[in-house]
Amino acid sequence: MVHKIFLFTLLSIFATANFVLAAPPEDSGIYTEKQMAFSQFMPSALIVENLSFSGPATDSVAKQQVPFEIIKSPKIALLSSAVLPGLGELYAKSYIMSAVFVGLEATLWGMYFKYIDQGEKLEKEFQNFADAHWSREQYEQWITGPGSSVSKTHELPETNTQQYYEMIGKYDQFFRGWDDSDAYSYGGERSPQRLKYMDMREDSNIELKNATTMASVVILNHIVSAVDAAWCTYRYNKNYAKKNKGAALQIDTIKRDRILYPALSLNVRW
Image 1 (tube, one colour):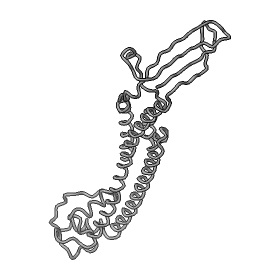
Image 2 (cartoon, one colour):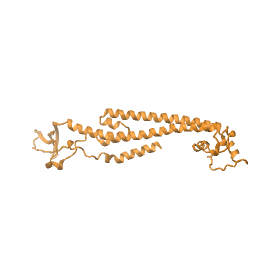
Image 3 (cartoon, helix red, strand yellow):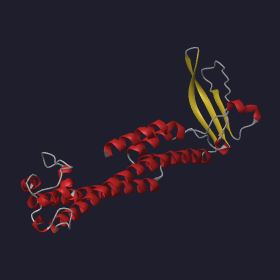
Image 4 (cartoon, one colour):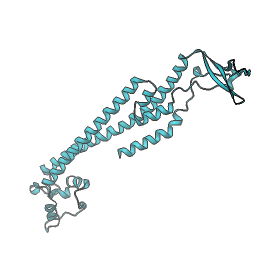
C-alpha cells in the first residue's frame, strides 16, 4: 500500500512539474540581447560575431525580452528531489537545505522500519498467545452443543488469517474458545485471557499505524523537497545573473559560405 501511494505521489509531481515551474521570473532578472555581425571576408582578421547587451528591458526591445539565463534546470532539480529528497537542492548548490532533507529522509525511514519491526514482533506474540489459549475445537463444541442458544452471526476463516485473529478477540460469540472462559457466561464479563489478548493486539496495531504515519510523512518530505529544489534553482539562476554583470570577450568561429572564420564575441551585462 505504501509503495502504491509513493508511486502515485511521484506521478502527481511529474504531472504538475510544468505548472509549478511556469511562474514568470521577476522583472529585475530580465535582459535583452542584440546581435551584430560584420563579415569582412578576411581570413586573417577577427570578425565581430556577437555584440550582446544585458540590462533592463525597454519598450523598443520588448519583443526581444527573454528570461535570465537558466544555468540550472528547475525541472531537473524538482524531479531529482522527488526521487531522493535533498538531491535537487544539492544540484542547486543549496547545501544546508540538501542536508536537512536528506537527514529528515533517513530519520523517517529509520523510524518507519523501527515501528514495522516492533509491530510485527508484537503481532507474532499475540498470535502465539491466541494459539496457546484459544481453541477452535472447544468453541465448535460449545456453539453446536445442545445447551447453546447463541446464533452464529460470524464464520471463522478456515485458516488462521488476520481476520481470524481479529474475530476471536473482538466478538463475544467466540468467547467460549478461551481456556479460562468456563467461569464466564456469554455476553457477560470478558475473561482475563481474552482481555490480555486484546491489549496485546492493540499494542501491535499502534506500532503498525505509527509505521504507516511515517510512510505518509516520507511522501510529504518528497513533495516539499521537490518544490523547494525548484525554488532553490530559480534563486540560483537569479543570483548568477546578478553576480555575472560586466563585459566578457570570447573568441569563437563562424561559418560563411561553408568557410570557418575566427570571430570575437562581446557580452555586456548590467
